[in-house]
View: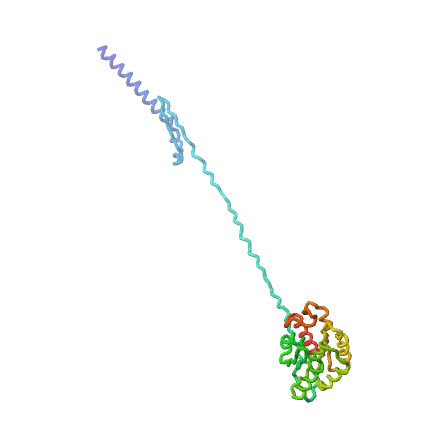
Length: 273
């Protein structure tokens, strides 16, 4: 009976030791996971947990969940600047009315028989041919009677014929004296033909000849005796513009600046009073 008892006793101790070991393992397991009993939260999906077992030691390496700090970016968008509005108020330009006075616009004494009222006749020499076109433009309807080398006496005869035919204008332009000397008697004879005209304009001369100044003096003195007579002072204007003339110093470039200036001078003189 003793051997049986001994065997049974050793078996009992083995069972007792085995029970103690099991209880120890259970206790160790409970100590290793206290978080479950403390209500710890489960690892987030971003956590990484690795466990290494070496013998009876277990090493747990936990990578802490990175804190997500929300990045708050305040974008300040500058409001678009208001477009500048420029208001331009147009000031109406002053209305400029240019009135061209023609001989027929000027109050003139009525002409005598043999003259055509409202009509202009011009008689001259070759210089008049240089400015004929501008003169016709400035004085619409003017009758230009000019010829190369025209002398004073020839012009007087021509005007006499026009008057006899009833074709002489009540306003007369005389541009003679370039081709030779004239006297006070010549002037008087011309005015005898033109007696009764509403207006007469004599154009003084610019010519490189000894009779230039004496002829201009005759014209100026004669004009002073007749209220209807005016002088277009071409001599003074021409002397200030030598560039207007050709080699002879007398003739102008046809329809050139000098020709236009002379036509304008005559027109202005005819319209003045």
